[in-house]
Length: 477
Image (tube, rainbow, N blue to C red):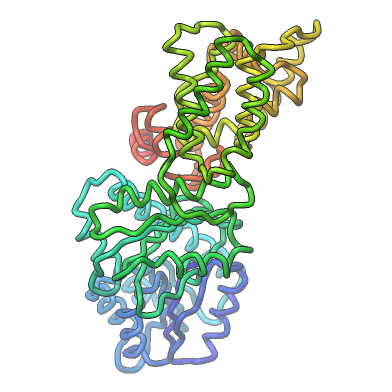
């Protein structure tokens, strides 16, 4: 939700502007409306709004001067000038000073709605680019993190940092209304997905309880959330970002666990469990293998394990099959994965455990005579729905093909694993949209099925050799 200041010496003008903003849904929030431009300037310096609507002719200072003084404060707000004067000189001067639009009173609602839509897209693009840049810099420790945090916070920095990663239910979320720390802490937010927002909390002490209570109070608005531990100094922010994101995905193990605080993975516990699976596989004890894999979800919940532990177990099994020279075609889909890739590959831990049993046991592989035509149907469905959440296990069930055989068919027919095939479809479409559409990069990301701008950025760079932004820029040359 973008914050708005309205400055006009005619109070009746507030009504039209407010009506125009309200018609766009929950995209904007008016934080100040005043007839006094000097007071507006105080608010602007303190609150640093995203958008300022101003008249040109006002007492004390003009709209043009307000723009100049706002820039002098270092506030990079977008200005919309709404005036009763249509003279070219006013319009020209406003645009020269950086106003992005000039509307005449009384407002033409059709034109105003078009302007608001363009404004929103502009703000989204600007924020997404800025927030993603900061997020990547923090995550990969590219820049002076302390200076970056000082620029993002309103007050002097406290000693401790903590991160909450939140996935909202809607793309139109208000990231300013989730937490109220009073004087105990300050925070800044980074929008890093259509529904994903990262909160960086800065305080003198651990704020886990206040963060958790804030999330619980707004639970109906959230899909899931993760809270990092707190740490002294900004040098640990990269790790805090990673661990809060990991925690936000612990619902992969337990769907009832919508809000989770990070706990370090229990590798020894998981290693022993993975060993039971590999030993049963070596001895071809498929009944035992079935018991172990089917009991996996309850074992994880009972031991307080999370997605980090699920990833570790998966990769332990991949390592075992590789180390033992297993080269059977049924193991073609066993590849090392990180937690983002695990989430793409499986709906939840239960689906992962079922998949493992079917893949490792290789039982009941005999297929009816029309398996080939069924796979063609599956492939056609995949080509049409690649932007949705698709999982090989669910698709193989839907089209009545054994999952390990389905995995083999993907490699045989397409030359790629299922995961590689889906990624290839998404990246080709993303490339096409970046070349031939006016969609923002955030919208391209969403259109091809990704909920995380950073992950999309990483996958696209691996696929094309450059980031989406650079790819588009190079294409336009």
